[in-house]
Amino acid sequence: NQTRSADSSSGQQTRTPPKGDYIAELSRLGYTNLTVGELIDLKSHGVSIDFIQGLKSQGLANLSVEQLLKLRAHGIQPDLIRSLKASGYSNLGMEQLLTLRMHGITPQYVSEMGAAGFPRLPLESLVKARQHGVSPAFIKDLQSLGYTQLSLDDVIKARMHGIDGNFIKQLQSSGHKGLSLDELVKARQHGVDAEFAKTLEQVGYTGLSLEQLIKLRNHGVNSEFIRAIRQE
Image (cartoon, rainbow, N blue to C red; front, side, top):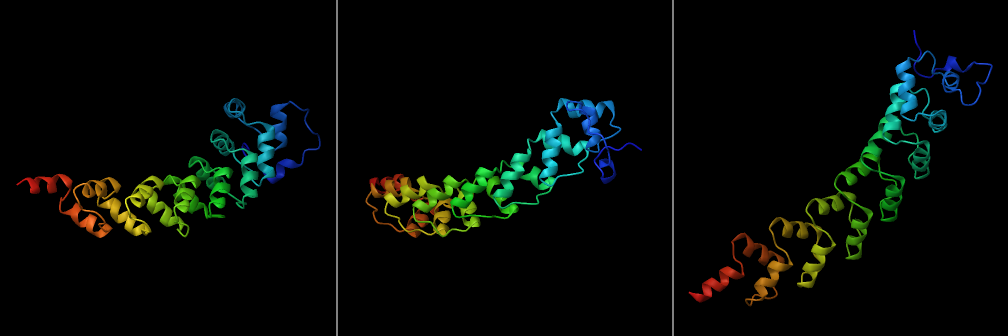
């Protein structure tokens, strides 16, 4: 039977192959009896001896040819694994590394999320945040407007409903300050924004509460409707 992944019995070679002998060095690492097709795939995809050794040094040993090719294709380098370890994510398996990579979760993203108040998040939470487009900059924007106690789920909720710094600033400028996240979501869901409030002010309806604005919006009462009524 051909051996296409490294195993414990393959390391008992007494002679180190000359440097640059790709096939011999692969054999030294346990990849013996490879087919011509496998050798071509490894070589053409840039699976170097240093790459294999680097992965092994980071805890990914005894990988099959298919696994080596998959890691290489997704750009998972030993340095990436090392940086993730430094960020607190050690002992990651191959599938976990692939998941992080496919979602664009880099050590920089992890570090910046930590600086924004979300350190050492579980992998599932990192993926969820990334899937919903939550960036450290988005979080800091919300925090700068007074929303400093939001959970990650709250931040994701804000992102999903399009509640960003600009939306909040405009509402604040129209007199609606100190709104809770739930109130902001409610405003967004009902199509109430600063522009709607402004148009009502122009026809004399000033100082309306958010609930009043939502009620008017739900009943189709806008500035055009009010002007039309007054002209009758």
